[in-house]
Image (tube, rainbow, N blue to C red; front, side, top):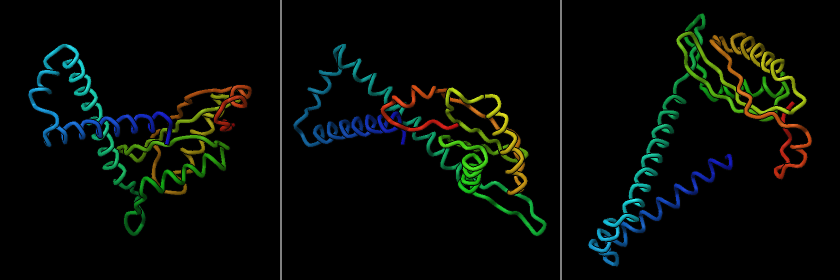
Length: 185
């Protein structure tokens, strides 16, 4: 889990727990309805109420995105075989592409996103490279190998392969970083 995702989940969990505690206290009696109403009637209370409402809307949007992502994750990619359909789960396709990226390209850190298209599959690969890497050369190689091997070995047509390089780090930056994670290529 990434640091940002972990931090976001921690904040959301803390906020949700705090709202839950306030609701329980209001329901049990120690927090009276008139005291709560008086607090939210002044300017600071309204600002806090608006901020909480905005945060809850963002949390709701996040969960809607998670549900839609899970629904899309359930859709299989279909290859037409001689005797019927051959279905591959998104996980299987992702694992296959991971192997290609690690073995054939030499990437170590990346994220693969798959999209159902009219004619097959769309692949987005997000990665970071070292400062010595030739970005266009590596990007072209990724696109070529993924676009060639996925249809060849799975029967699923690759409509596009998008490569997104999130950062390019020099070796001196990575060797002095706290995480110690080596950057690929």
